[in-house]
Image (cartoon, rainbow, N blue to C red):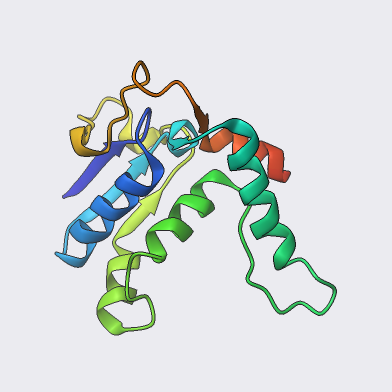
Length: 142
């Protein structure tokens, strides 16, 4: 049984940490609408931080670190940072977690879970950027 989590309006880091914990516990998780996840902070600061991360690994000698452009890959990379991904239990947890842009056909009409611990109240903090906007800024075409 796969747990479907709707990423719309969720804080990226909090969502990633909760999903990482549940993945380590053995739960199979699918995150949909990852492009609508939120990164808190001013737009200029968030975009500058991600541009710096992306350019740091983009030198001509191909050493990395490499930061993905697509929202589903960037979400997966964020979750990976919260797992022991070089150990067998971390590898198994990563295999149990799937990320999708939009809602795939197999999850249409299914009940989607909303994690209240990761939900952001936009009225209290109006400074945020969606993950889709960050990825579009980085050059993604999704």
